[in-house]
Image 1: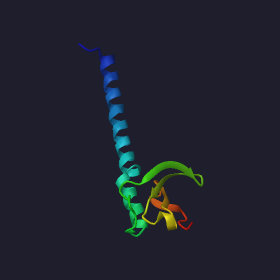
Image 2 (image 1 turned 180 degrees about the vertical axis):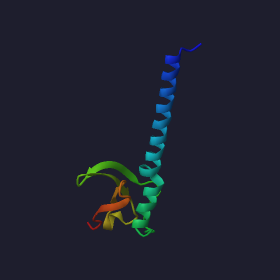
Image 3 (image 1 turned 60 degrees about the horizontal axis):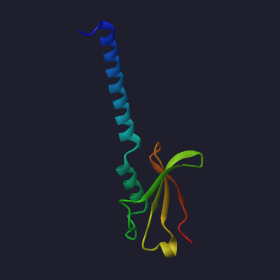
Image 4 (image 1 turned 30 degrees about the vertical axis):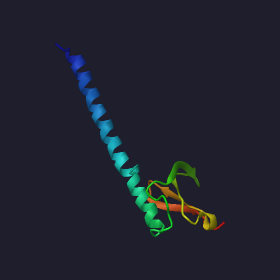
Length: 104
């Protein structure tokens, strides 16, 4: 038989775990949805047919101009002429906030 104090502790731990999983799930769906950012970057380029890797771009989370952003680099078949697309997406604003120039 479980003591009442231990039972209460177990219930509290389970409730806290359920709350943490719910918060993590909400955060993941709201701010870490990679499909949403891929589509946002693809739309920003006006679906440029020269992009080779829009579904699997190079990306990293970095500080840029004082904010945390997701930096996408999308290669094209014209990189020698213009360079790749290099976009900075703010996950909290859900928009492209900057891009590196493509002209070399």
